[in-house]
Length: 56
Image 1 (cartoon, rainbow, N blue to C red):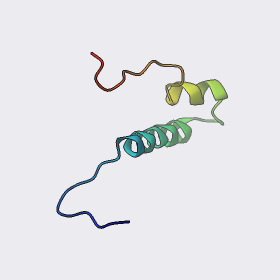
Image 2: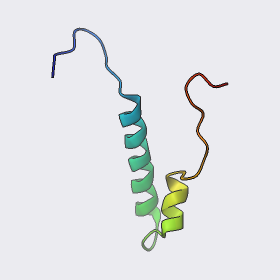
Image 3: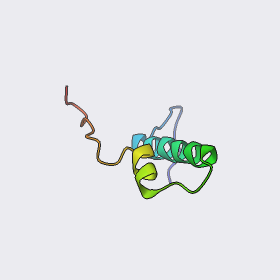
C-alpha cells in the first residue's frame, strides 16, 4: 500500500461498518440474554432504506 502524504484518508464504508459493529456490541452488552435475530436486524437497521449519495 502506498503511503499517504499529509492528508487524512477516510473509507466511509469501513467507518459505517465500524459504527454498526459498535452499536451491536452495545446492544449485546445491555441485553440480559442472547439477542434474537430480530433484535440484531433492528440494531443493524436491516431493511431500512438508505439515501444514496447525491439524493436529496
